[in-house]
Length: 215
Image (cartoon, rainbow, N blue to C red):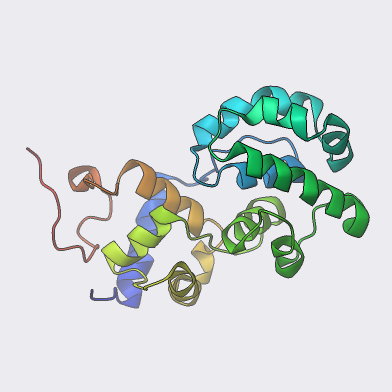
């Protein structure tokens, strides 16, 4: 897969920014802790499904202490419509206890500290640090991984390779919102089975050879 050149990369992001000046994540939360919980719950689940499950939960749980008071059994009752809910419930309870014991009940803006929490990997840590703390991180999910490879933006064999290439190749002015632009573009336009190339704002910049056409 050919890699896009710097001028093409700048144009790529410029067009995504013009189409979505202020991109927002689709997980609903009221504070940093709720965001962390929502992202943990979203693994192998849709944002829509997570939002549906957390709507009532987040009305009564805003802090790690309130989550521990709720308890694992009642948490399961709220999230049982989400895939892998038992394991996720266990992780949420465990991470809530660690936040209280080691971080004063606050979510830390530190990659290593976040990744030490049960159920939190590099992608989740990047999402939380970007959205909650404004860090210029790029979370590589299946959509970002696909776009990095398909378009020539940042080809790589692993999510980490794609992430590091994106961080290196994305101009500084776009880093803050880059992962949101790429996730949303992958979710709604550059879809896995059949990308919607005719409506794509970067179709003439993209290096993908098998572009779809209007039927």
